[in-house]
Figure 1 (cartoon, helix red, strand yellow):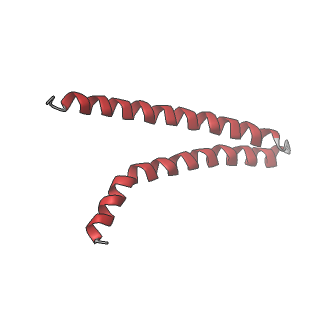
Figure 2 (cartoon, one colour):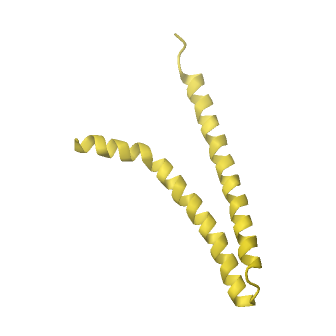
Figure 3 (cartoon, helix red, strand yellow):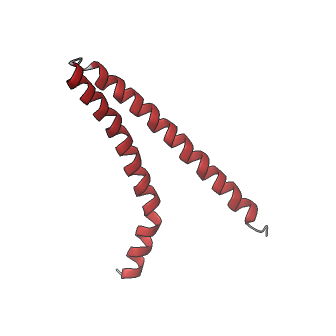
Length: 84
């Protein structure tokens, strides 16, 4: 394989890798906060469960935002593209 093609492939995949990392860290943050509060307040597993639910809601919000942004970009590209 050529070095240029690997760099091009990574360049094309980087937005998706970043999105995956962002989604994973969002879920981990909310679950971690719930776990920490459970340990501090000795309410296990209730706040961990609440944190996981908030994490899932945050994931869905992020996914909808990304889809809306991709739709806007797709529409803008379609408008710029000359008709044959």
